[in-house]
Amino acid sequence: MVISDQRVLSVPDPAERENLATFLTRAQRLDPAAVVRLRRRGSGLVAAWVTTGFEALATRTVAAELTVDDVTADADTVLVGLSAAGPIDLGYSLDSAWRGALPPDQGFGHIDDLPARTLVELAERGADLAKEHGSEHGPPASLLDQTVLTVSAGEVRVQVPMRVVFALTAMDFIPHAGDRAGAEQIAPDELVRVRASTTWLRLDARYGSVARRRTGGLSLTPTTGS
Image 1 (tube, rainbow, N blue to C red):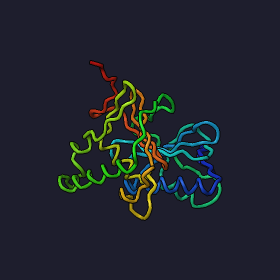
Image 2: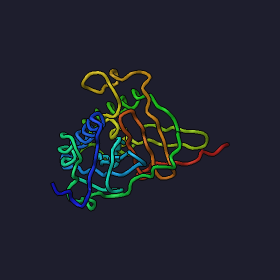
Image 3: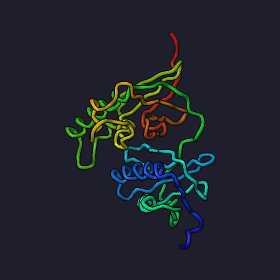
Image 4: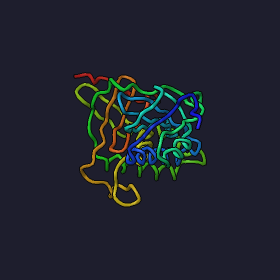
């Protein structure tokens, strides 16, 4: 087999192969033509990034080796490769298919930990509103851009829009009992961590993270005292 320009992904651990396959399968539910951006994260780790359709990115890090620092590949190609043992030929580079920058690996501060149930409940209420007021093009932008949570740490306040909550639940990053991630299926002590930098917001759940650049009304501003 001829490897395409040495763009090769190796995921030797079967459990990690399954983790990445699950992540990509969920991405394909949101976009059947999904691409995945793979980036090295230190020794023996690779971060996989996908878009979600909510102007937010989703990511999961797995134990793996990548022969290049950063590459965008067809998600289906990676999925097919994960179904068999051995290194995965990523095929031709699809770097031009990726739009926008990735958030930095460093520079995020811990803002707060939120009950996962709260986020799922917000997503459920948002989905009901989307059915009522949406169109064939999806939920209205006014709903997606709405701030549904404001969290703070010290003098820093972060607004969380519905877009990010929808992205988190659409990727099924919160563990739950049964087939459906309803609020009643979420353990009461399951948490989602809110982190932020001066330019990005990130929600970290057990099975992955979502991130969104500070646009569309998202703010990260110090509060002022009286």
